[in-house]
View: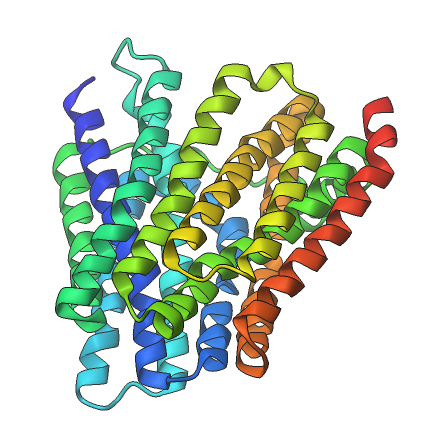
Length: 397
């Protein structure tokens, strides 16, 4: 690897630490200042509203401007937004409107940054003999290790210095990542942008029609959207609420999310090694069944260790479903429309998350966490029925 690759990996590692801090510190901070789980759910749900917009327009920005410029500036802008939250709170100027605006802007900028980092990888390898697969494998390993190490470390930081200081440290990671990219990454020229192309509406229409008309894609996308509807609120709202109300410890929250990450890491390694030997439809059915059973058993979990075991199996299932979904898409979508289908698929998975955050926030406020887990198990049971009813049509396609 060259110095650019090492700099890229260092910036990514710092960014992953910041993501872990943000994942735990932001909901913890919101629960502290609002003392209301439904408002926390609403704010975290609204946070994801800009995701689809950034997916649609972020790539155009990256194609028009240097990827290095996009990533460096987006990191710096993210740092400003994160620093603004504790700064305004300290002078009693952080009302709900301002907080929502800051969080939405932060989410949109982060999505553009992530897209820029992903698009930068092939350019880093132009003057090297390293294959793309190897660097991407290292990047994937850093993500998985970050899921294991980051949450406990973030939980420890919150427990020792509080969520406000954790947010300040999160902002510092953005600055550090920006500086590393600025120093180590050469200026990557922008790609030429073609004006003569189909309209965005035509692209979206073709992507939607392909997803819902192709039996195998339709078979996969509906349970995938429903699983995402549960997993994002689980990690960013339900587990913080459980840790705060039942265990009263941010450290326990970190270890619970780390157990999830451990399962996801193991399952991704399993799929990489022997994934092609399994029936894709049956693997999806088994993963959905495992998730439903885990949420059902979580009703009776009396301590954090039982919850960690269940979350390990939840991570095991979700970690299999991620590469499984990608494999089904890659092997069934024609190259000509692959980009727009992936774009529509990603948007579908995130489109329901704001509703999910609000729904589970109100559900936790109106009832018990046991009933919330029961609701999650039942809805995934419906997804399981869908999969069993459509399996033969999927395999025949």
